[in-house]
Image 1 (cartoon, one colour):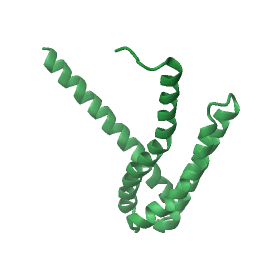
Image 2: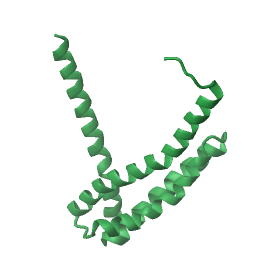
Image 3: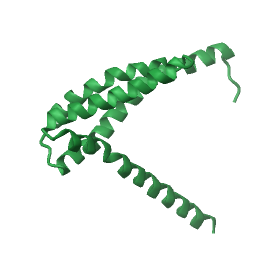
Image 4: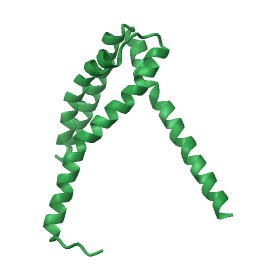
Length: 137
């Protein structure tokens, strides 16, 4: 389809959409991954309500503002890496404080959903490949 808008306007609107979507992406990741961490907390013996957990872990979002500097050459990559590391440290510490788990178990609860999500993605991808192979036969 032809684009009825001038290129500069279409590019500007696309950049605006990406800029608006950036914090919404972090918010959805925080909610979904937080639910998986809550399940891991319960499995490791932590005792916390959903409200207290999300209230405590919300402080981990502030350091992620450093990832907004990522377009800056050299400094942006370092700032983004520092922001993600700082955010992870705040998330683990908040998880430990609110659940009453020791710090190593709280860190395990935060990191445990990663391989589980990876396994689900691999199984889903394998299932989709198998289904597409069956449909092509």
